[in-house]
Amino acid sequence: MSGPILLPGATGLNGSGQQTTLGVMGGGQLGRMFVQAAQAMGYFTVVLDPDVISPAGLVSHYHIKSDYLDEQGLTQLLQRCAAVTTEFENVPSGALVTLGAARPTAPSADAVAIAQDRIKEKAHLARSGVPVAPYAVIETAAQLVAVADDLLPGILKTARLGYDGKGQVHVRSHADLAAAWDALKNVPCVLEHMLPLAAECSVIVARGWDGACVNFAPQLNLHREGILAVTEAYEGNMPTALAEKAVAAASTIAEELNYVGVLCVEFFVLAEGSLERARLGALVVNEMAPRPHNSGHYTLDACDVSQFDLQVRTLAGLPLTQPRQHSAAVMLNLLGDLWLDGATPRWDKVLALPGVHLHLYGKLKASKGRKMGHLTITAATPEQARATALAAAQVLGIAPF
Ligand code: ADP
Ligand code: MG
Image (cartoon, rainbow, N blue to C red; front, top):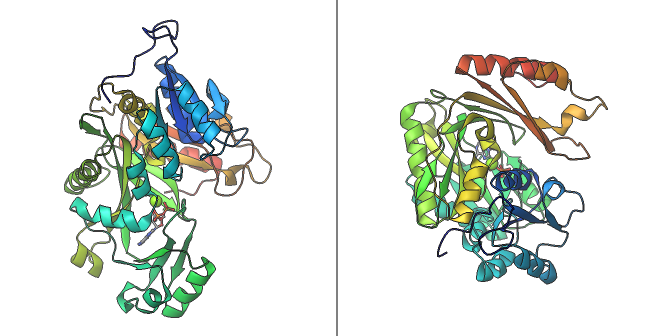
């Protein structure tokens, strides 16, 4: 990319008398928050998503309702926009190749293709200077039989299309493993050794076209049933040495990929005294997401620049500044489970608590495990943020943490 994409003037038109429009592949909640950040800076937005009603489509200036590989849809998108980003990693990388040939596209098709495939991803993450979980690739019956005993117990994960713990089966024995691979229809998989976790954390970095890289401090994440439930973001949420190591690894991963855009890298912190920790060290890289991440939603309310602001800036070639967190924060995910018995969550009681920011994504149907929104609780101190978050969780029937 040669220079920044013209910021629109007061009329929404740029210096060439045209609307400056940014595009996003995918219409989910991440796309919605990208669109909102872009619009706050005066850009017009266009979303491509086949769903007639989608969280991002509902708030965008334009919504192209086509399949991700539909040629006409992609052509319309290119006609509308000056640059394109993506909000979920399962956008076919072929679509990004087409887009990337015509417009600045970030992240690139290459980077997304790696993040889409656990087999390619593992090979890449291994170069970060932090180990990955011991694993085996399973694409053939011979590889299944050859799995070493010390990888068990483990988790069999499909190489592609998994999210929120979907496409994963816990296995204890070789017999379990064979049954699990059949249940997953014998698609390419990785078997990962089940690690004893003390905690999980993630680091979000943003890297520009010029290689400039900024980051948020590591977030501490609690998953329940494979889905992110709680993120705690404040100073002292994890030991400084581990935090520094995680930031260095995430930055290295972005650099090695020649990545442009927002990237999230997830880590495991291994249980003290465990054999695995003695062997691998305290920190293990889990996976990466080539986009803003659920664990970074708190940045909207607790930081001077959010992960979505940085997505806009990286895409448009605007300067990046190191984000500053001004409040301690706890984020609670609002899953469809909260609506299931037909009741509406008591937002009146939750919003009566100090420093509560409610974000709902405009999804019309709740289902178990579906991400409907999130709450960020900001406060002057970590203790206050935690106490208020626990009070909000109690009102909503979310288990304490
Ligand atoms: P997803 O793409 O669904 O987020 P992950 O690989 O991140 O898949 O797995 C989801 C969650 O399952 C993790 O955040 C962690 O809590 C648990 N998990 C995954 N792999 C392992 C492992 N090797 N050892 C222990 N727990 C794991
Ligand atoms: Mg994950």
